[in-house]
Length: 315
Ligand code: SF4
Image 1 (cartoon, rainbow, N blue to C red):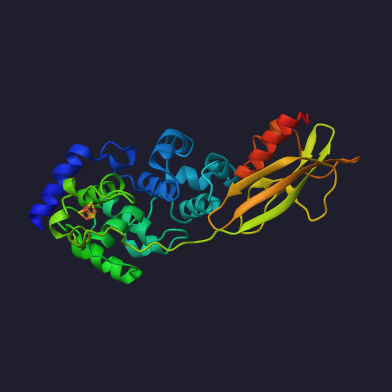
Image 2 (image 1 turned 135 degrees about the vertical axis):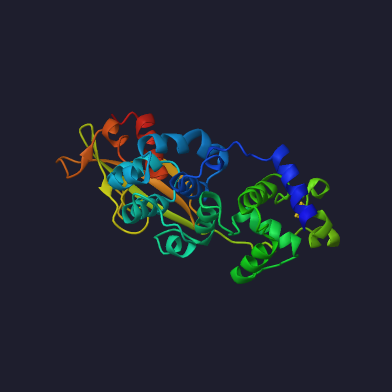
């Protein structure tokens, strides 16, 4: 395996993204933050729009723990999956000023899964842990020709392949290999260090793991925006879904004038909402001007509704 690791590191030194800011720090908080942001969002977006502003506002785990949740959600706006932000905040409150130093203690914190715990251990504390984000999973499945492996099998394979002498560089290189070489639609085996031992190359079949087709259901709803003079009514959400964010209110009964529709793709369903504007004669609780609304933590759907209201000249 030594020859393979050496080839992998030569490739990583030349082509890898070793300049990413979270790869040039051993601060567990910064590494943790990058892992959480990158869970559902591309590197480019995180790098250009979210990572640095978040750190500027909350430079340490303690600063994050001390901040009100509303401010954390506001800084997270646009990244979606707001449970991630809430868990980040909760973890900070439970562990500030420092994150725990063991895999097991990290796993016990809310929202920290096996991959995030492994990444913090490998990158911040240089422990022998194999990181397994989506790209690495694909690489492993191809190397071992695994159709639909259980989590246990994947973890075993990942640790079997891990370079225990340098888990830090190995994990970084594996993540980049998955992102840049062993890609979903194209496997560039000619430049891949694992080609000599890869089962997918040997079989000339790259469909590992086997893709499962998932049909995303469509949900339709009506949202009635209540307006009084230049103010609009919003509610702060309390359920699990989008908890803590402010939003316009869904309604089964339609009143007022239809001003358009908005759509949004969530992980488990697609939302299609008709938007109605209804002028009320008395002021309701929680009414805000559009300028005030833009300062609240809003979901993407509610931001789209604000754009619609502006286009409609509703103020
Ligand atoms: S040899 Fe090809 S299929 Fe195998 S891990 Fe490398 S790029 Fe992927």
